[in-house]
Image (cartoon, rainbow, N blue to C red; front, side, top):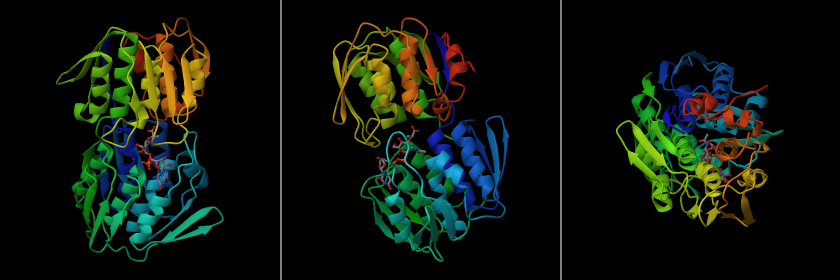
Length: 405
Ligand code: EPZ
């Protein structure tokens, strides 16, 4: 691989930020909003509630003048469970929301018990009604909430509901992901009073109302990390642009350990991959640990490392779906409990494989780019949920990758 690739705005920042647009009746402009399947679904969710959304390239204009419905269509919630983050802002704006109990997905059952517990602490009443969650909150009052686990979605929902609750809310053991910081910055730009986002204690002082703003979404650290790993695995010189390197510290530390050469430059990260590196052990953790969303891509890269790597997934209960597919390409991997034991091999061979979830799909693309021969990857809609124009961007680096009907 050789050349430059531009990272898009962060999917996992723009999704909760779109939900936060429900907090105001003013116009909001979002710059660097990636055009992804998941973003299209969130836009449909906002429109089903009465929002008006216009896209102009990377810019989204969002206005929710009136909330015209308190219920989102069943198929939209089931299509993308991340839409559960509309609960907080809907309770803040309207005091009521009805959403279908979100299903699980390929990587796990994905319950929302901590979301609901936090909202109840703020004064919401949750009722199950034939598979629907019917939540009312005549008044939201600030509270001290301790999260059993630093759940990203639960932190976001509670933060948005607390943003206009009476009094102050403290979230302890809060998630610290950079996307939480971007959401808090966005709410503060609309007039919110949130302090401590990015640490495990977040203070939210409720305010009366919010005004419009223009916000630039942070770059997608997971997309950036995926390109860095592809360059390391394939070899060649690749400049990954539009990166906040501080967000990639956990990955960069692992690349140092593996002996992958890279340089942090003003424009981004320049990888000088030789296509050979040592095996390193990975254990996914909540931020600032190694991100679970890069576990599949780095595992794919480790199938070609010198030595044996142990990859342990601690965040999701079923996030090794890519392993069977990689083994069909000649990888030597054994699953033992929550760990995958990866024995490096000389090379992978092409095969027809299927993406099972977003990051597993990215891992298969990485493997196919290094494999001898031409692979076919099925179910690529999973990949298009979170990677904007992946084929185009990779062709720009010299990869031979084409979408076919
Ligand atoms: C967000 O999901 C991301 N999605 C995920 O990215 C990411 O993998 C995850 O955070 C962890 O970083 C978006 O931001 C849209 P969690 P989220 O709540 O909020 C369990 C991708 O590939 N849990 O931190 O759902 C849950 O089942 C996606 O871009 C409960 O048990 O993550 C999981 O095992 C995949 N009860 C763990 O906690 C709850 O109430 C972490 O979930 C909430 C979560």
